[in-house]
Length: 471
Image: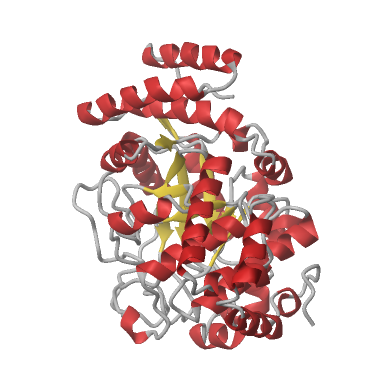
């Protein structure tokens, strides 16, 4: 029985409820009256449930679809402004005991060289990332209790936070590791992590168990209930995501929103972020062997409908996607992107990109400087801000501000300050020129005269060598 407040995976992600939702959405995909009612509800900016959102995703009326995209773009501006937060993944180890059919880290892959960073190598990678200008990392590791125990992850986090190179510092470490225990989540919370991220891969239990034939990840319920344990362990910012291409996108979309509804119902706070990875080629993985691939048009609509349904949630797209695809979907709701990413274990300190241990092919291979300039040329503010996390504005405190559309009052000036740091310390002359012009324009959009004056003062101090101002 479907119960969003239940702690049991098969009750808050109900297969029967998803099937009923998809039938309802298909039945109403040309029901203009119902679609109009859902859009009117959406305009209240309080979100939609999984059934309502599924009707919009299924909608086949062109002018209604145009309205969906326009509404998503407006919501993105209302809640997140024209800021785009930047981060980079740091792969610590590709040792893994699981048998996932879509990931080259699977235990049967004897062709991939297995690597694990030592603490000194972590230090080298972090310095290289700091020298690019990054302030926020997402650490990744395969599941291997011998090679990648929680103690190793904690040591890496400690090392990352300890490194201060020139003007560089990693101010937020997000963690993407396998489902674990409440006790281990408490350890991660005590280590000062930002968001705990775990992709469901697929919400269809039958498909999930087929795709994960061996290893601890085979346990659907344990994996699906991981966010509950993370919350119980004191991590109040969690990030959801599915790997689109493994199962019907309509099924995954409904499941993803049901998971968000469950977190809201049980803990009073929905996901801090939702990620949108698509299945990509990697090592011995051919995405054409999977039957549920989606094109760019469907991908864009999924993102637009998610933004309308969860207007307060951060939305992430990685360098799996091409520049053209990222440029399109940023308008419809994406608020965070990776830049200058490498998905191999190590390799940031090398000029040539290593491919032998990549988890997936990187489509957007531009440098961070090029990505920053590209964003600014589209009139977005590249933000390296971590102020909310460091000021304790996380979980329900962040969501309360975001739902009231008040988060912009600190995020906008903070974005300008962190961009200024990047321009002074790391940018090419061309990027710096574009950035200085953008800051001069954007500071006039700060509504509070007091905050505007303080921002101008902080910008001047950054130019003179001081760092790390925030609101």
